[in-house]
Length: 321
Image 1: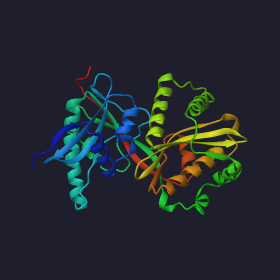
Image 2 (image 1 turned 60 degrees about the vertical axis):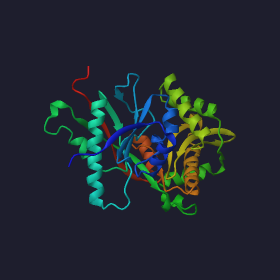
Image 3 (image 1 turned 45 degrees about the vertical axis):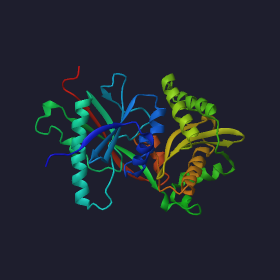
Image 4 (image 1 turned 180 degrees about the horizontal axis):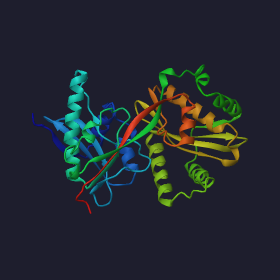
């Protein structure tokens, strides 16, 4: 049976954000305020059937408008589905497959290249893997597996959570017990510490990246969906972090640490307090936003989350210059 879907663009941010929140794959990274903070052109696409939205996709573009790109600090921004709660599992799989095929055809017709990472809450990427399956010369998607770490906040209780952490983290938490937490930290101070954190690794953060970090953080704090916190040891800020929030999850997006105070336990104390804060907010999960480099992944996994797989998908038209 032929698809009866319509592919439309919307500028109704309020309705869009409602659909993102309702989707099981929805995250803060597809909401309009976050997209605006990226300071790049983007389009909001809906797939409709009989005027009812069934799927949506935020498309961040390059300057030419011919490439769908994955912006820095945006771990997931793929297809989101509006699930029918009454549908059986087999019906949902079949419907999402059809919607994905339709979206893929629309995307490769619209863009010379496509780069996006799907939500870790979407399991079936067969429509991408099977695109032009019998005619690879016409262009196919490449797929790179990626990981994030998700902490189920239903398992977190203030009285017992520390016991679930790795022993070294419990030791650092004791070290950091005397540290003070500020939940209204200064953004300029964070930017300075962020730059110095990378400088310790002999990495120079480009000005454009600094500007993007500032834009994301500033908009999140001002919009009430982000919180910048600091942890001070001996009256000096030792660690800072920015968490973003939506209705379901907290997201650990940025962190910075004072090199001289790395052994103060402040980074662990700050993470611990932010986990408990996410629990107090009534959220279901905390997403550590990536577990794809050895040291960072090890730190995140020491707080007892579960690894979750997601997929980075890329396509380039054979006709593109």
